[in-house]
Length: 168
Image 1 (tube, one colour):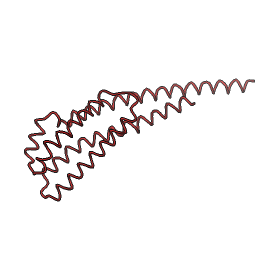
Image 2 (tube, one colour; image 1 turned 120 degrees about the horizontal axis):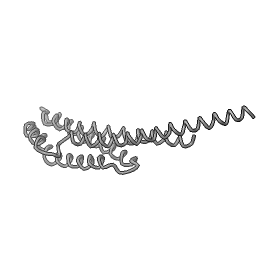
Image 3 (spheres, helix red, strand yellow; image 1 turned 90 degrees about the horizontal axis):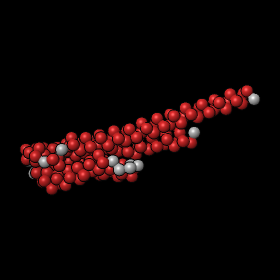
Image 4 (tube, helix red, strand yellow; image 1 turned 180 degrees about the horizontal axis):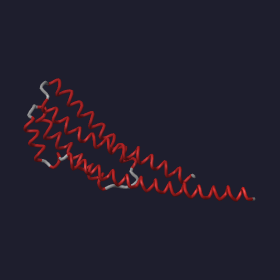
């Protein structure tokens, strides 16, 4: 029973500490690109200020999700590492190249810059997270199967003990 409890705790930990924040990072990285385009299309300085603040807030949310995943990964995941490199590349490209264009309201230039840079490929970043999530999902499935086997073994032993006790 202790083994089953440990396996169940592992499943919950991997789900809450890895899969959920991975998905938060995935949503946040897409939101980052959408917010940048929103900034470029914002008609007023006050609106641009609000969107710029939202971008900074979203970056904090993504960083928090990254920190949680990194703290809870049992072993390195190459796909997650690819996402981290891609995210850092996106933020650097966005801040150095795209933000000045967006803050100036030059939406066409933002679109051209996004289309021309691999650092702006939100789909590739999303695929890295999806692959890492599948690996963690498989680990969770393995832990669940182990817990099921241990539970079945325990039930057989308990039934045997019950039958033996009844016969004596």
